[in-house]
Amino acid sequence: MNKKLLYPLLIIIGSSCYGILSTMIKVAMEHGFTTSEAVTAQYVIGFLLAAFLFILTQRSMPKLTGKGFLIIMCAGLLTGTTGIVYGQSVHYLPASLAVVMLFQFTWIGVLLDCVVHRRLPKRPEIISIAILIVGTILAAGVIDADLTGLDWRGWAFGFAAAFSFACFMQFNSKQVEGVTPISRMLLMSIFALIIVLIFQSPEVITNGKLFTTDLLYFGLALGFFGIILPIILFSIAVPKVGGATASILSATELPVAIIASVIVLGEVLTNLQIFGIILIIGGMILPTILEQRKQALHSKGTAH
Image 1: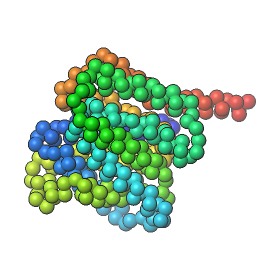
Image 2: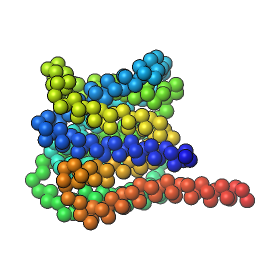
Image 3: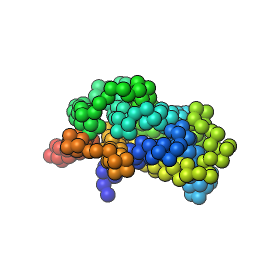
Image 4: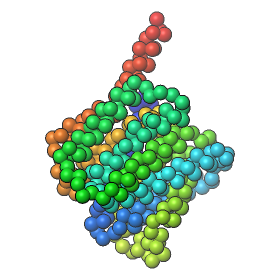
């Protein structure tokens, strides 16, 4: 496969994994577990799976520079904080609205990338974000929904999750020499686990609840789709495409989340939501299409 298509595809798959997390947490809540317990299970099991993969494939830790260590530490801590505040948003809001708030990382990520690299947004980025925002409003069913009575903390936690995830994308877009995706995943999962154990429910480990109840199965699912697969894929692909493009491509998270909530939770999908999902997909692939067309025209121009 063409690498120009492969790396965007990896980001789409990774963000799709994040899209099903809100539904998994809601199902865990229906089984009597708190969001805090579900998030803790996700990061504990995620770390154990990462350690198993590391021992199986590498066994020796890479040598890190101070800058490389700082990049991975910040990416890991932001992974943990995103999981914590997003879990709280899911607690206070319906799954579809919680993911809409998280979805704000698309424009925040582009804005951060512009600030970091001291540049203005590119025209394809502006057009793409505009399409994504309209698609988001339609896909989430915000127009038809009754938003009165929803706890303001859900909105606040959701926006905090979006900002945290956008920052995570920026740190994850920075390459660290000599560090493989597996070792990077392990180190990130360690830092993520530390902050989660401080602020969530570490008692599920000491009282045996994590390993003696169905919480273990939720932890396995959340750990694999919320830690292992997306971190590996993002570690490979985000440095290749950049933080801004990665944020836009990650828009696939929203339609996946809505479809999962429809299939698993029985939420109703309207025609407006379907149209919104189509807009999101279009806005997501637009920058890649425009960039490839620009490069093709440039190649023809240099050839002549």
